[in-house]
Image 1 (cartoon, one colour):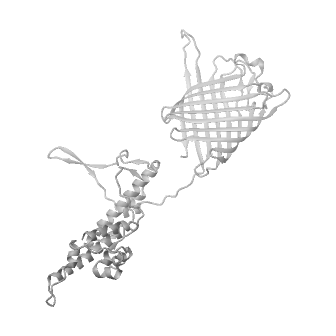
Image 2: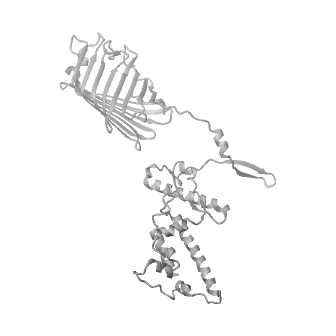
Image 3: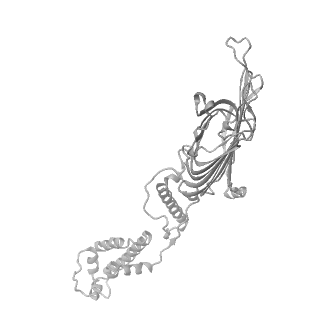
Length: 497
């Protein structure tokens, strides 16, 4: 028997390239045949036939009392004669496979993966799993009782799902968005019941059992519309007011200030068009303040700016794009000096247009809600216009006797949008142009504090540098100019996503 057992283990190791289920099937088949032959031999040994006593060499061989002769030169016919189990315990594995395959063994097909395997992955725990491939489609043994085969099917299906789930989570941890410990508790419905005898109110949870067929019938097909253009619209109106009584000990003036800001941004959806950039921003700011010390004008324009920025680009490599950018800005209302009819600015006086060709770098950090666009245009065209005859054209860097001035040079632009917190947003735009003779730059910064959906406080700082500023109007600031506005008021925002 020891030799038989040794051969069985040898068979297992030799057959490691086959499925585990078929290996055990052949082993069990071998044992069944061996025990059948053994029982018949014992019966013949204990029952005399034709008055002769049965030969006990077979029993002695199985019990190890007699050792089979080991002679390499012994012919195969003699080995088969001395050992009736030669076909079972021989080294010919293919002979064993042919005998096992001829037996009738019942199998059941494994089930497919459960439906939960096709839902978003949820991390729950890490467990030790066997190393059976999840794609192994070999059959499994049927049980002696046919009614219990479904248990094996469910167990096999769940085992495959656990293996697939854990292997997926270990290979792609960044794609597992949900954790069982941080999922919200599903909403529950309770029904209040009053017991008059005890004057108690009992709350019982209402459990609704909905079948899968009911869920499918209630779900209507949803038409998904791709949005190729994304819109963001912001509008704000902010005010400040001060009243000082005539007899106030420190003196002062009554004043009212109002600032309106409208901004509309449209850009191509990068999800559907990752190789292109198309973005346009239109913005208008108007600030009006009362002028109690101005004997000619009742109000003064503190800010009046219409500006358009556009960018078109084609991806070159990674986050770099071949691009063309354009900027246009002017104002709508006339602006005068205090206590004077001298005009300082008007519509298209000045008007500025800049177009550049170059490269644009686009960077986004979604976890930190930070976005930056940087454009460099080695070839740039700049145009200045002054259409009003009441304003000296030299105030805007245009030669006397001309209404326009054209320069060819280079420009650079950096735009930043950063959500510092859920209610604090910082935007910045730095634009620089030079024709290698003079330099002009604008740095606009806006810090917005949203108190709630409709109230906000805003700080706007605009720093400008213009080397063409006339020397007689430079003063202590020389070529630098600065505007700062702090305001509080209403806001409204609209987004397509």
